[in-house]
Image 1 (tube, rainbow, N blue to C red):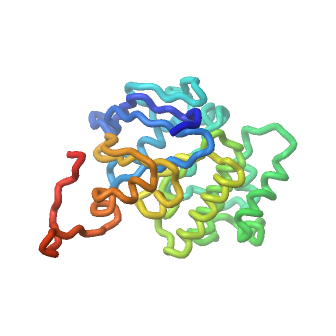
Image 2: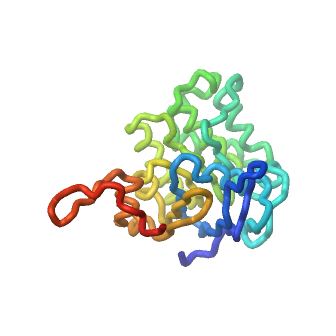
Length: 257
């Protein structure tokens, strides 16, 4: 990864009580790129995002935003520093309108370009424009995901953290969401760290990927190289390899063990 990193995570450990959820994780997200974190349920993906955004404090390690340490700061301060977190499950404000939800995303801003940024969000998510006065809680799951992403963009973040944007959505909606993710990166140069169980769509959108298992990084590489990896294909994409006799190899051991 050649670009200078917006985000650096250095040897971070995070605990839930006595349980270590993140085990010495180190990674970086270069400016203008999408980096995806892959892993099964319980791998520590959401914990990693919560640690970066200040919802959880690491017991050890450093988190740097443009070279400045941000670990241990309050979440609202980290938002002001330039980290926007789109959490798993959307978490929109259900009784506020679509437009008011977007305004909430800009609560840290004092500039005079908020209206133009709302229009930009509507340009990328036209369905939100149609429902700008509708209560967010009455939107479909896909529309709420779009709103949560739009709300994150309203902070004008240096990096956007996306937690499981495909969760609970139909395949068609997943493709639509990830198409917009790629457009935002290409057209607006939005830097993103994307946590996702759907490895195929994540790697097709990302530049680089890390595989997290039981709280530790077990594999990393350029997205297209990870897509071609036998381990990724078998354990995350469901592609079964075959022996020379044409028989399926069951329970093949991961090469990173």
